[in-house]
Amino acid sequence: MAPLQPNASGRLQRTHTYPSYAAPSGRAITELVKQNPFAAVVTSTDGAPLATHTPIVFPPGVEPGETLVGTRLWGHVGRANEHWQMFAERPEVLLIFSSSHAYVSPSSYEFTPAVPTLDYATVHLTGRVTVLEEPEENLAVVEQTVQQFEDRRREAWDPTDSRDVFKKILNGVVSFTIDIETESAMFKLSQDMPTDVHARVRDDLREGDHRHPDVADLMDRVGVTCPEGLPD
Image (cartoon, rainbow, N blue to C red; front, side):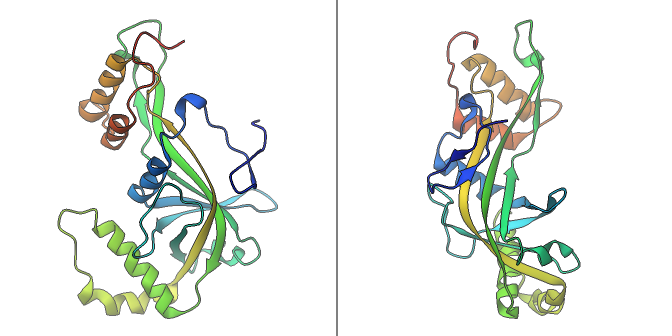
């Protein structure tokens, strides 16, 4: 088990990150969260941890910088999901964001012996969650969630005519904020491979039988750390 290490705020967190696969920058961490606004929200319990998968978005006007520590994020779950009832007693939560998980075949390496692997990027955030009680706050979270996803489309849907429907379903929704206290990440993107191998893996993920264009795009941005020869 990895030892407990203090982060910049002095809080302890248990994180295992291979040095070869550290996030290339703080900006890369914040952009991964922005581009993948769907997370597992995990709460510690007396038994097994409890997790809910749900959209987690940035409030209006908030643009991620070099770190998410100190940032407030928004989320919501269905009221029938009893997870939210734990937030008052156990406000510390873990958020897990990730890219898709891309299988890397040794056929892209062109050397033997070799072993397959998976490429991916993941971000873990911890913070304190607060339930929003006012209907106006609840509506703002729901509308911002729709807006953030629609902004990713070439032609965004206009929700104006559906606002009354949004209001009618609010009793079935519980919205909340998460104030981020720690962040950690791993970007495992074949960056420890030579340049030519890295390029073949990337091309296979973009054009091969099992495509993961999001991971291929991340590989473009991260590049390589072992440009010559095979890794040790």
